Image 1 (cartoon, rainbow, N blue to C red):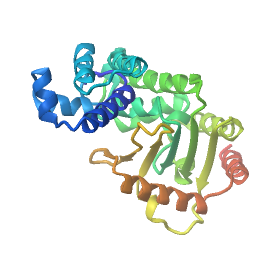
Image 2: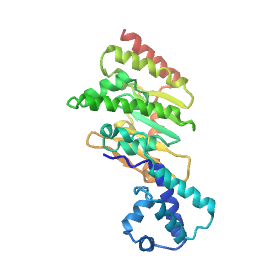
Image 3: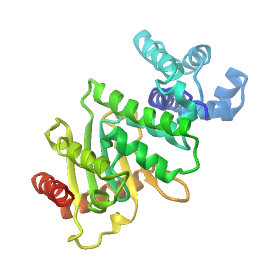
Image 4: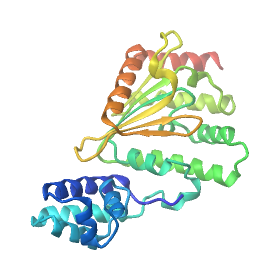
Amino acid sequence: MPSQGPLIPRRRLGAELRRLREAAGLHLEHAAAHLECSTSKVSRLETGQGIPKTRDIRDLLGLYGLTDQRAQDRLLRLAGDGRRQAWWQDLNDALTSNLDQYISLESEASLQRDFSISYIYGLLQTERYARALLRSIAPHERESIVEDRVGLRMKRQQEFGARTDLPRLDIILDEATLHRRVGDAGVMRDQLESLLAVNETTGRRLRVFPFSAQPDMGAQCSFVIFTFDSDYDRNAVHIELPGGDRWLEVESDIERYTLFFQALAGKSLSEDDTDALIKKIMANNQ
C-alpha cells in the first residue's frame, strides 16, 4: 500500500480551498473546468485525498480571487507539505490497512484518547512485547515482515516522543490487558514495569478500567479519539474490530465516543491506584 504523504497538511489545504471556492460563489464544476480536469479531482483536493500540485493550487487561488500574498504562500506551503515523503514511506511493506492514515493522524493530533481491551496500546509497548504480540496475531507472517512491523512501531514511538508540540496521551487499559500473557514471563514483567513510567511523563496519563467496575457501553471494543487544536482539522475516531477497522469523522460520532471515554474514565482507577495495581500484578507473578 503506497504512502501518500502527510494527510493533515492536505486536509488543511483542502478545507481552505473549499472555503475560498464557496466564498467566491463557485461550484466544483467551475473549478474543474478551470483546471481542465474532472470534478472528482477537485473534490479529492478539497477532502485531502488528492496529491496537490503547485500549478493547480496557484490556478485555483487565482480563480477564487485570493490576492493576499501571505495567504497564498501559506497555502502553497501546505501543498508542498502534502507532497513530501512521509517518514514511514520506506516501510510500506510493514503497513497494514488503514495504518498510513492512522500514523498521519497520530503524527499531528494534539490529544489522543485511547481505550484498549485486548493488548497494551501501541505507543506504550516495549519492543519485546510488540514482537511477541505481532508474532502471536500473525503466526503465518514472514519473519522479515514481523520485524519490519516491530521496527515501524518503535519508530512511531520515537517520532511521537520527539514532537516539539507536546502532544497529550490519555490511555485507559482494560485490566485484562495487564493479565493477558504476551510472550513469556520476562516480556510481561518488562512491559508492566515500563507502564509505571507513563504517569511520570509530562502530557501522558494512564488509568486502568478494573474488573470491579460495572459493565460499560464503551467497553465493547478498542478505540482511539484523535483531537486537533486547529479549526482546520477534523477530529476522528479509529475503532479496532476483528472484521476490519472503522473510521468515524462525523461530529456526532466524535461526541458519542468522547462520552464513552468519559464514562470509562469515571469508572477507572486513579493514576496512583493504577500504578499500585500494576505493582501488585508484578509481585504476584514473580
